[in-house]
Length: 162
Image 1 (cartoon, rainbow, N blue to C red):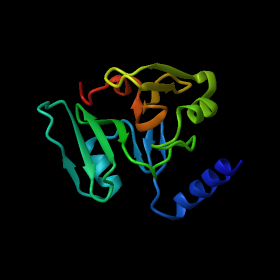
Image 2 (cartoon, helix red, strand yellow; image 1 turned 120 degrees about the vertical axis):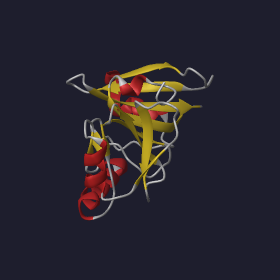
Image 3 (cartoon, rainbow, N blue to C red; image 1 turned 180 degrees about the horizontal axis):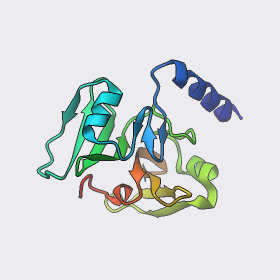
Image 4 (cartoon, helix red, strand yellow; image 1 turned 90 degrees about the vertical axis):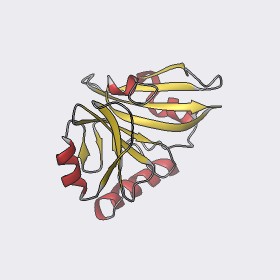
């Protein structure tokens, strides 16, 4: 119950403040499918491109949002990556939460698979009802270490753009 009240308070404050909540199809004002120019204009922030060696897929990040990365494929936003606590999903989960809590929140809607690189880790994947989007949590030793949301295809990539 305390978790629900905390989430309700945070959701309410995000409208008035500068908090961003991650949904399956975006974060704050940024929505999956936006062009890079639309993203830049919507965020009102300078976007810095990370070197990827891949012209069609790369990441950008916004000044002041150090733990949020935006994956761009063919000029459009397809995924948002989060790697630190303090940034919540619409379900109230964040980095540092337990796999058990994620299971409780999502129930049978969540698919658990073995992590490709972390022996003590898993991927916890939830697909949107329309099957177009999803969110995937990466875990290690029962704790969420990062998560990403976006197109279902893009959240399948376990090495960033690859």
